[in-house]
Image (tube, rainbow, N blue to C red; front, side):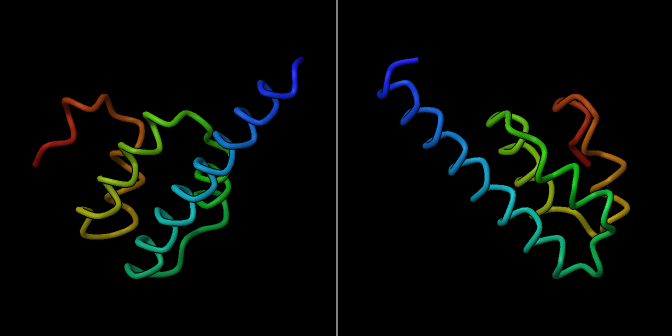
Length: 79
């Protein structure tokens, strides 16, 4: 792997970590985030999924609502 490829991967990992932090911060405002849920958020590296989860975390009325909807296709997230 060339150095520029390594840097690109590091940058993407950093972006994913930032989104995961934002998601967990929003969820933390709703209550205690269960460890298994936090682990799932931290392990996710796909930007599209993290962006969807971030929007969902911002709209969720509670942690259980977020958990229920996080694995649904995006078209099913509208209330």
